[in-house]
Length: 586
Image 1 (spheres, rainbow, N blue to C red):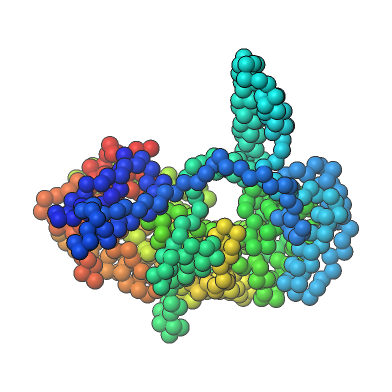
Image 2 (cartoon, rainbow, N blue to C red):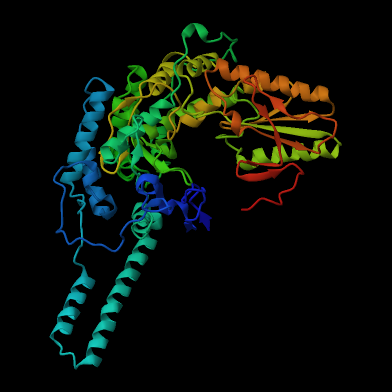
């Protein structure tokens, strides 16, 4: 249990006399003291009044609204999970008969694709979603019949009434069991239904709380909350660096990739790899539909992808995203910074990215353009391979009698603060030229987003920095951004997994400790050159097999001193400075 009240509740003297315990701090949205009643001039009490707002919802309340249907036809209007094989066959037959004429550019061709597919769904009889509130199923009718029988019976028929009450309770139990069984059956095929069922039975709300705006006001409506979060997410962007400030460097390779080779089979395979239950983006085009009709629409989609490369134009709908805020456990629910942004992008664009990514990965790996210490998002490497290599190095050096210092580095909002110009310059240095370079430039620099809270959307905002998270190309671009860190660290060994970086040094004398400080200064310089920022207070220094005569503290240029600690979390594993895992809990 956790005590949540940490301010004085009784004045003169200031003492905490009111206690509030909970085993789940997410159930409490806010605790606000009111000291007006303790004013000496008109004191009503020597205790402050405490207002507590709970984060719970009523899970038993039901509304008896009639069946509702949405008359606006979009891809969201259809229930594709209820499609039979005959319906899918009919839809594919209709799509195969469409001539798919070229409209001249990828944007118009994409609009034509959406319109034609939507009309084909209607013509083939794809079931429509029915929004039911308080639907009258068989159990409802059974209960209604039982209630009528009980109402007609006199109170003297006590035994008969008890039998009917037992039957009544049984209908509730049967209905609950049927709902649970249906949810379990949907785990593999329709995971959204399963999680919706789980969420409906949770007492804790997952909605966005009222938020403190930048002007100090409370945002209460979903529209105001969405715009408040939009301001928060744009505030973490980094200001683009001037062209003159980008350091000129030598090329990493003499090889080049100027264009992408696109064919129908690669696109089909990319779409097959998509998860069927992936949430759709702003175009509302579902992954399930795309996977079931791909053989009928691969030609128009391939044409759109080819035109995005040849015409140097990506349709705006494919580079826009819907951002869903997810609460960070343990944070103040009223602070906009307490919500992590999760982006939903078009599944069609995700398929296009997979085709592009496959060729970029092949080019980078074949020409050794990704630093060898990088274990993130690479075939045959993972968190496990990085941890095993790191721990093996530590043990080997400890067995040799050496002290081993490991510095864990944290970059502030690493994905969000990546400077477009610097990243594009590094792509050029790695030989990405021509149409390939232009496509990636459009993918990065012409992005927009809206924040969704409830059913409301914020105003649209341009993305001025950062690698788009939730995309297929995002992780690969982060590897490119960090690929030159290794060359700057000359005394220690670098271990990286995406943006998680650590430097390991063998320390035998204070001179070795001084060399580690030089590596840290070099890393600080790299951070400035790349228009990024370090999270100084999140740096962790572990000293294995510590020697008494070694000075281990590491000063930063801003005066902050990194002090050694006993342990740190490394990719989910608690590492201790004695080389054991006694405090790690799975």
